[in-house]
Amino acid sequence: MAGKLVHFEVLAKDANRATKFYSGVFGWDFSDSGMPGIDYRMVRTGEDQGGAVFAPEDGKTELKVYFDTDDIDATIAKVRDGGGEAEDKQTIPSIGWFSGCKDTEGNSFSLYQNDESAPMPDGPPQG
Image (cartoon, rainbow, N blue to C red):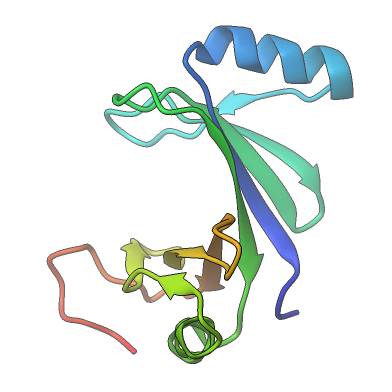
């Protein structure tokens, strides 16, 4: 469903502290994503919804939300046409596409489109 919140990321200075906090508040059980080279701790919060905690190298902290879209290219165009900002889409290999955006008020959010055929970053462009 377009616009449904499907994923969130908690960017934390201390991933251990953050996962302990959210586990204590909501009872969430985090697990390793299995992505090589990144400590990306995932949690399932609903049948088709979840999130992750990780500590980015730049030390940035924020809460990112990802909204579902059926057509990421069209939705990026709508964001831009509506006065917002949208990065070009990026691939999550074998999972889908995402784009970082800002609304007209400067609030950050991201778009996500499921697409199991999404290529590795150096593969041919899709969409």
